Amino acid sequence: MDYAIIRLGGKQYRVHEGERLVVDRVKADEGKSFQPDVLLGDATVTATVVAHERGPKIRIGKLKRRTGYRRQTGFRAATSRIEISLGGARKTAPAAPKREPAPVEQPAADDHVKGMPSGYEEMTVAQISDGAKTWNRPMLEAALEYERAHAARKGAVAALESALRAKEEGS
Image 1 (spheres, rainbow, N blue to C red):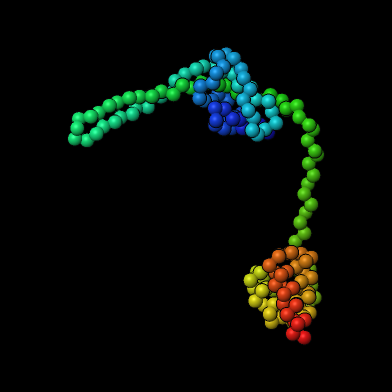
Image 2: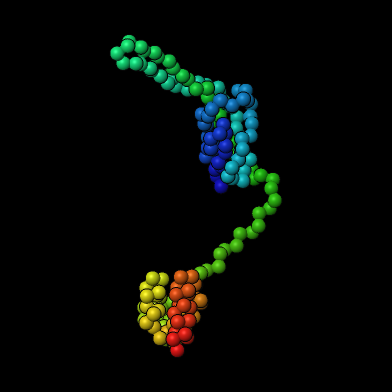
């Protein structure tokens, strides 16, 4: 990772090696270095204070109409210019080796369970709930087998199981 995210003065900054930032005033003197909190990144971040400056002047005007009351004030924020250097990796516990996620098997077109209603793979849970009331027992069992093996949609499984129970009670 060639960048890090640090927290400095209650704000977060994404920083790169050699980058110069203007931040709220820090307590370190000019030329001194400090280490800000690193939120993201496995590098040690060192910030060197290049200069203490003041931000641009912000003008604040007050007036009350029809009375002649007018006041002007200004404000300049105290800022520091810092330079960032990213060190090597932090001394932490060794990271576990990354494993690739197991590929998710998608049901193929020829992976059709025998006896299932036609076009079942593309049906939504609502369509399955409506259609399950008219399907016969082998169709319901095949659809339930397909759901448990492939899609595992809770709503569809519940609809199919309730339709099977209704068929058993009606038989």
